[in-house]
Image (cartoon, rainbow, N blue to C red; front, side, top):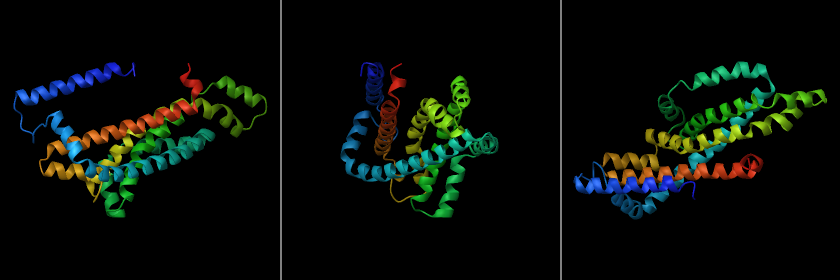
Length: 247
């Protein structure tokens, strides 16, 4: 708590300034609601936000887990085979030059207004940071340890399992942290383009109705969910790599 106290105090100061500015300059609520108005909306619409939030959480978690699986599979393949890395890695980088907002409407056309397009959007957003971080981590392990195990007759799989993968775990979890926060955003983007339920459609409806306080309330929920996802990855990393955090 002591580590995050300065950030928390600064955030509270910003909220106070925000509240004062809205009241002093008499800014209309549909332009910029005060923090107190946003808090009231969070309380009054908590049931609706919870209902829409569960849908977004489900889409984000499912897409995130599938992205981890795909990222692990490709990273291990590239780590074990330089030929696979030379073939897949450039294509993976090129795929990130295509805006996800341009692809998402295609998913709606192909899969319809079901959950699949949102999950695919989350996978595409989360996949690259996970894969890239693990691939880079695998390529920066201690070469002396690799040479030692090779000289002792270890197979490529044993070298990977004993040295490369454990050595790449910090990089892997760094990518997981980035993707965890992106996962909620990916679900929101998918819901913006077509959905009947979720925080993304809730935000769209609030914006079209000029209910800015509800829009800010939804944004607050999205931020909280992203922080919770980040915290889960951080705690998992501390459990999996206690040696790393004890440095």
